[in-house]
Structure formats: structure tokens, C-alpha cells
Amino acid sequence: MVTPALTVDTVIAALRQIKYPGMSRDIVSIGVVKDTQLDGADVYLDLQVPTEDREVIAKVEAAVRETLARVPGIGDMRIQIGPRPASPDSAPGPSPLPGVRRIIAVASGKGGVGKTTVSVNLALALAQSGAAVGLLDADIYGPNVPRMLGEPGRPKADEGKIVPLVRYGLKVISVGYLLGDRSPIIWRGPLVAQALRQLLHDVRWGELDYLIVDLPPGTGDAQLTLVQSVPLTGGVIVTTPSAVALMDAEKGLQMFREARVPILGIVENMSYFICPHCQGETDIFSRGGGRTVSESLGVSFLGEIPINPAIREGGDIGAPVVVAKPESPEALIFRNLAEKVRLEAEAAAVAMPQVIIR
Ligand SMILES: Nc1ncnc2c1ncn2[C@@H]1O[C@H](COP(=O)(O)OP(=O)(O)O)[C@@H](O)[C@H]1O
Ligand SMILES: [Mg+2]
Image (tube, rainbow, N blue to C red; front, side, top):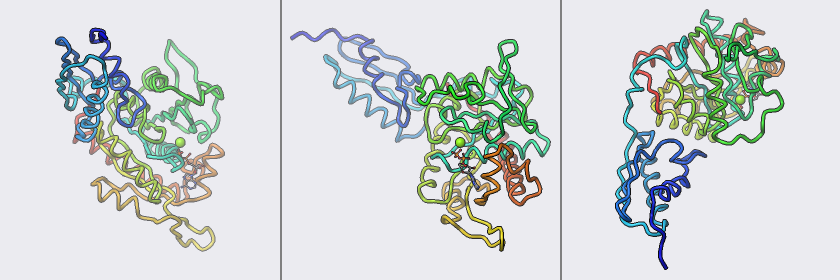
């Protein structure tokens, strides 16, 4: 039997079968394959991986070797693989979001830990301190920001740009406002990336000191798109004190590290319960895990937020505790958190020129 002649297209098609570790996208579509050459049956590949993590690089190489070995007629493989070198784009330069000084992503390993609650109250507390603040709901799958801020209607378009809504002094945008109930339940990776890029680039953010980005849980397409599209000042990781959530938080943290995004710190939410009657504090989960993880990973601990019905109700009725009960102990806790985040963000911005990975 004669095997068909090997072509570069066949090799690329085989490489498209390989998913980037932890992502739904393949290594070709995220630009890992820089060069493919054939010399008869022998193949030469130049692979540049968007991380310095040796384990991830080794995984990609092993998957490439295994996949190509199954391509009929393939000869020797010469694979050059390493981290993607910093491109000229990574030099501090004009921001792709002109007028936006700092972009802070709020992430968590899993859902339901209070990421949106923290994003909303953090953004409002920063705004209360006098900063110009925007909030981007990047949780394309489950946009909860509209509910937490109340229902202020639909954003308008102006000269091809989306005008963000203004809520309690925050400029805010969410697919929830744009699509309402028509938001598809299942988004394919490329659509998520496209929607998020639009929310970043096609919105008239104007002058902002801080743009807070509420990410979906986990480490997927939205996270990758965000780190590839704009220079992030840093990431804030939200976790609950339970062991599983903490493990997931570590994964989220790893994602930022791989993308060379500074980690501003870890917040422990639903940390403890203050009894409304006796003011006694009860540790419902094992309080303090967030601090321990921060210490062992060498990142800042940003604070503990108690579990409190006022925090949940504020979110449910569209009046977050920071604005609805500004004198409450919970509001004070969020304001302290905001101050820590502000300090960490300013320190990160000075310490590290912002990196964009393309
Ligand atoms: N500290 C808290 N105290 C009480 N309820 C909270 C607290 N943090 C979050 N919640 C509630 O928990 C639920 C999940 O929070 P949410 O912010 O939507 O999580 P995520 O964005 O991580 O999925 C919401 O109903 C929210 O009001
Ligand atoms: Mg959420």
C-alpha cells in the first residue's frame, strides 16, 4: 500500500487535535505553532508556548510527539519548543484600552465562592474612595452583575461603541445587559473570546482609574482571552476557607502566574459568621485557610469577609451592602479590602512593566 505524501497541511491538521493543557482551544489556534517544515518525511517544528511552566511545556511536547507519531508516513521529528519570548508588544506602550489606568481581574477556581459579590463591592468601595471605576462582567456563561446592581436597562450604542451603564457611580457592562435572557447556555470557546473582546474594546470606558473584571470560575477561554487582550495590572483570587475551594484557588493562581500576571492577593470569603444577636464569631468552614495558602504561595492575604445575610440580600435586591449600608461593619470590611487591593495594584504596576501575550 502506498501512503499518501506527507504535507504541511496534514501535520497542521494533526496538531489541531491537541488541546492546550486546561483549555478547550487547540494549540494551533492559540498560536503555539510558529513554524512547520518538511524535509521529505521528516518534520521540523518550532513551538512557542505562552508560559514558562516547564510542566505545561513538557505536556505540550509529549502530546505533539504522540499525535504526530500516528500520522501515516511521518519520518523523524525535530521539535524546538520553549516559552514564547517576550514580544516587542510586551514593552510598556500605549494601552489597548486608552484612558484605563489599571485593569484588575477577580478570579476563583470554582463558582459560588462569592467572586461577583466581591467584584461588585470592591468596585463600589473603590468608587466611594473617589476613583473612577468600571466593572466588566466577563462571566459570559452566568452574568450575575446585572442582578447584583439592579436592573438599569439596556446600554446604547454611539458611533459604533457601546456606552456602559452607570450604576451607583460605576460604569458597568455585562452580556446580561446586551442579551438579556437570550444569552446562550452553551458558548463555544471562540464565541466566548469574541464576546469578551467586544466587552473590552467596543465599550466606551472613557477615563478610568480601575477597571474591575469579574471572570467566570476556573481557568478557561475567558481567562486566556483576557490575559491575551489587555495588560492586566493584577489578579485577585477569591476563595472560601474549605479545602476544596482552596485547592481550586491555587489553580487559578497558577493560571495568572503562567501568563505572568501579578497576583495582588487572596480574599477569603464566607470566612466566619458574626452572630447578629451576640456578635460572637463562628468559623463555619475552617477559617484561616486563605491566609495559610497565601503565605505558602508567597502572595498577599487581602482579608476575610464574613458570611452575612446582609451581603447576600444586598446582592439579591440590587443594592450591594457597600452602598446600601455604608456604615455597617460589612461595608467597612469591603472598604478595607479595596484599600489593600489599591495598594497592591499600585505596587504591582510599578514593579512590573505590563505584559501582553499575543
Ligand atoms: N460573604 C457573604 N455572605 C453571605 N452571602 C454571600 C457572601 N458572599 C456571597 N454570598 C452569596 O453567595 C451566592 C454566590 O455568590 P456569588 O458572588 O454569585 O459567587 P460567584 O460569583 O463566585 O459564583 C450569592 O447568592 C451571594 O449573594
Ligand atoms: Mg459570579
